[in-house]
Length: 148
Ligand SMILES: [Zn+2]
Image (cartoon, rainbow, N blue to C red):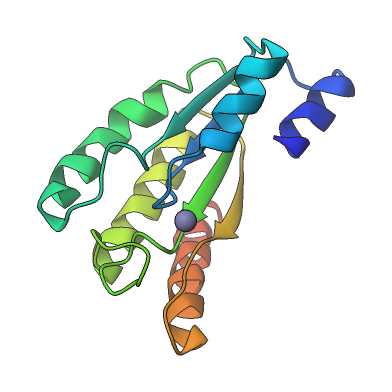
């Protein structure tokens, strides 16, 4: 939200998308959007819709529609959470390969739509930390695969 507000204040962008694929719902983002009466942000958070491994395929199938929701955005901020991993103590519905697919699909779709994306690492509470870093590395690999 800080990034979106700063870009809007600079008048450099008129419509910004936020795709939040962290395990936990982006209620803070929603609260700020509501409190400030913002109508120039499209916010999608998966955290309140998907949590069970049985929903993994449904989630991956929805990514196409979720990215299409961002049509007309000048930029998408993508929160590539690592805590939806099945082994995460606070998460638990996507395998490593499914997280890879998630990230690849987001980058691929936004690239086809010609919408720039800025993504951030988030979440991830597995021990040892290397397990979380491996997921983040996979997000970077997916990004390079599409944009590199
Ligand atoms: Zn989280």
